Image (cartoon, rainbow, N blue to C red):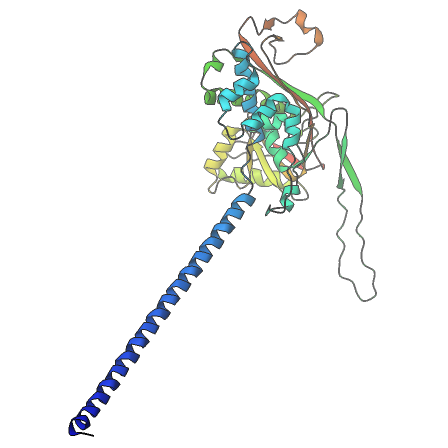
Length: 418
């Protein structure tokens, strides 16, 4: 080996070693960069997969969630509005009128169905189908087949309609009856604790029942041509309010009365019930004492106590009681000022047949009397022609009944001072 080679060899070896180090370092950095790139891509893949799963889950949940359904009252009022406007337009087709008024409405087909066959519509509307995608599957089977009744649907602010929702509802047709049983309160409560080999106590058990026998109820609402010339929302409001007032108050006046009833009229809920002794005071203490006494008069203690009173009475009580009225309140204009009623809503039973009659007319002749008494009243009462006076009428009737399922589940006080 020459001297030059001897000198160059260590230099070349050193350079080769340095190059190898740099190459190893660069290869390590490249590998690290590639790994980080793979990690980023993997993370993005995971996020995309999660996003897809979330989107699929949300889509399935949206499909499974039942769409909001319109109230029966809303559909009935809209169908009646279309029928009245059709009559006003000189006998136009109600279905064509409904398409013109509600063609863009998401429940337009339901409105059409109510116009074609109102009885069939309300019967179908009471049944809900249970599906495996319904998260409240069992809830869909509870009380879905009981039609609340045309009167309760068209007069929802009435005490009758509000109590029907809180109590027991059944459908009993005209000419039929249904016995609602209840357990008669035993005289004593046995001690359930026994010794070894001793017999268990047996509490006295006996049943009684109250019979629901629906009776024909209904009303007529008359509208002028001028009322039906408003815009569609205004017409709906007028129709809805007048039906609520004219029909609901009539049923409330009988239900919250004291009359014994007859073959054609149900007895009032207060029939045979004696008024409690009320306080003579006028302030919050007197109101609290009277409400307490009304609840205490229902024995055993009520499960769902509800107060019924005049709207003015309710406002006054809410103002003078420091924490407001402690119980749910139903107001009705038929309750006299100074009278307060308390009942156990869980024991209120009502029935409405599932074949109501809802008609409209512009040609009928009506006896304008809010208390017709006999078939021969035409001889003594003036008759008005709807056609002659440019009026339109809605007629609603069905067979209904109402009772307290057990005795002693209602109390009332008269002449309260607060």
